[in-house]
Length: 114
Length: 111
Image (cartoon, rainbow over all chains, first blue to last red; front, side):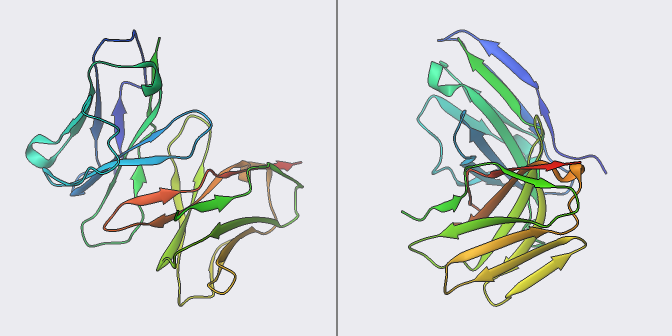
């Protein structure tokens, strides 16, 4: 079974540019989450999808961040325009709807804003 | 605030010894705690979940305890191996499926 995949693995952009991160969850997992780890800090929750619906987006930093999950499969996280403080590692995770509580994480996308 | 606190200092132990990592929580009573392992350049990998009514849980060489009086969970790796070297994260759920992570403790096991 394929795990959670994320693309790209690393992105370097200039301040003010736009970047779109993609996450493909494990097949059949209706729950999809985005997290971010800023250097030296703990992993922080950004938002949670159930299928295509946003269930909790309380962790989204501001309106420069837009997450979508059209069709309830893969998800994208767009940052527009990017700021220096957006640099970090963005993780995606997925889990079954009514199964065990563990989440399966992707390898992350390292975003560097210069 | 409802934080998870882990010892930020790295833990260095000799191969074969038992590693013990600590997770403390304050101002709330989580229904359960989770432990994850994270290797450099990779996402966290789920290891164990322990509920508040479970005092201890084991999985192979791993053992987790949950002391609601002390508001603490201990994570033990027995007969540690260099391959156990990683960062170990404690986490809890906070409403729905939102997960809050501790900063993690780095473990180094020397051969």
